[in-house]
Length: 452
Image 1 (cartoon, helix red, strand yellow):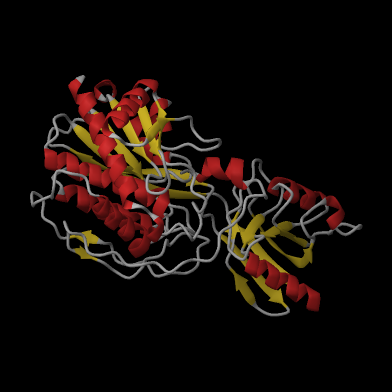
Image 2 (cartoon, helix red, strand yellow; image 1 turned 60 degrees about the vertical axis):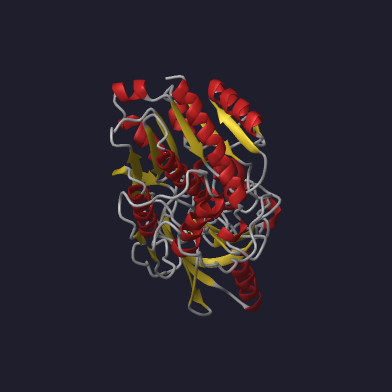
């Protein structure tokens, strides 16, 4: 689910809470369909992330044309994909080495099912994962993990640190900050108002720490006049404690938005044609393993692709895993823009799977005809699903198709409380939920094929 919408509308509110500390990842069993060359957990390799070692690409050893398993969907097989993506690879921010590693794994799976695989690369400019740094220079040298706020002004600042509480106007010194760096606690007041108050009080930059021990990502609805970064609640309280002992000076830097490269992985039948596209995004935010959002959707698409191939389902069905969804639907937008007129005319439906592994019931969102057909199929099969409207402030890759007047439906299970946090781990994902989504998708694809 894209941060461009969620952060602007939800994370801009200081009332939203961070997450507890990172749980230990649990290793996945080896795929029954592929012997995986698994490496140690790889890092995202993105600017502003803690230093990590990027693991070698995870590759499958299954040869194209080998057995692809049973004709019935398996939630356990889908879960194994989740575990590889979220635990063995880990956070997969758009444009990072880990996103490339995930793309390689996805491509290998689709090839093993007999699809012709294409990697579609594209450039994008992201407000996320911008270079940012924060160092304490007095009274001791200390480097902290920070994240640049979306819509933060770029800049490099050195100065005295001043704690100004929650950032209400009365929390600042009567004489103003006179170029000092404001240290603010998250909570009560909207983030954009905290930053505005700090700038009006004369701050040269603002550091906002979480109101729980964990790290959080900050987003602003409008451009700020000063550089703004976020840090964990634990680091924030550490700085407050240092200030109680005497003066603290810091050096802070926020870089400009990043120009990055991402990719879509496209699996086509031998014909090369796409009467339907089933897809979902495989990137995550930088601080989250992205199990629910959206390894679960990616795994659902892979299991759907496997089952379609195993059943030799009539029709030309394509499977596309999109990169760079979190920064703003860049992957799906690029895919749609690359379609020629004949391909647009041929495409009957896009099925989008985003956050399918946790919660109930299955929500159906998008083109009315597709939603109605899917809801009827669900009722006939005993699948708990219902037509719904998009949750406030959220969107996903199906929107890129709807905006181009192409029919699309989003399979979704509700907003997960730990999405975009370190607690979005594979152990929480429910295999039966993904299996249910694949089952319903198969029914919908069959219905669409009968209407061709």
